[in-house]
Image (cartoon, rainbow, N blue to C red; front, side, top):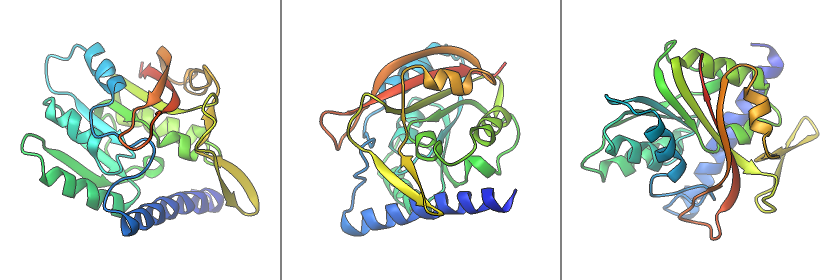
Amino acid sequence: MSSKVDDLIRFNRKKWNDKNLSMYQGSDQNLFAWNFKELDPDYRKVIDRMHASHPLKICDLGTCSGEQAIEMAKLGHDVTGTDVSEVALEMARRNLLAEENAVVFFAHDDVLDSRFADESFDLITDRGCFHSMHAFISDDRYIASIRRLLKPGGLFFVKGMSQDEERFRSVDVIDGKEYQSPYHFREKELDEIFGADLEFIDSWKSFFYSSVVDPPAIAEAALFRKP
C-alpha cells in the first residue's frame, strides 16, 4: 500500500473505533441512524432472490453491533460479520450471547485490506460501510476486494445514503480537505460505480430502516453479481 492509502485506511479505522467508543461510553446501545434490530427488508429480498437450496455463506461488512448478521444467521445461513472497530465487535458478540438460535463469526477485518481467502462468500452485504469511505478512499480498492471475496456467481448488495436525504450530513477533515461522510448518492450512482466491474442486477430507492430514527433515512440500494 502507498503511504497515502495507508494513512487513509488508518484514519477510517480510528474514526469508527472512536465513534463507537464515544457512543457506548454515553449509552449502552447502538444509536447510529441505520441501526435496526429486525432483519432489513432489503436483505430478506436479496436472500429470497438467491433461491438457495443450502445455507449461504454471507459476509456482513461494517456489521457494527451485529443485528443484521444475527438475523441472517437465524434464517440458517453461515454468517460472518466484519468491522474495523473492536469496540463495535464487542457489542456484537454481547448481542449474540442473548440469542439462542444464531451462530455468527464476528471478525476484526477491513474490507480494504481483508484477511479472508479468495471466493469465501456467496453474498456480501453492505448497509453503511461503503458510504462512509467513498468520498476519500479509492473505489477501485473496495471493488477489487469485493470481487476477490465473492464466489463466482455470488451477489453483492450495497445500500448508501440518498441525495434525497437532507439529514445526516457530516464532514471528515483529512489533511485540511473536507469530505462528506456519509456520502449521499444520487439515483443510479451506485449502478455507475460498480457496474463496470460487477454484473448489474437491480437498483431501487429504499430506507435505512431504523430502530433509532423516525422517519428512517432515505437510501439508494443496488444489487450486483460477480460474473
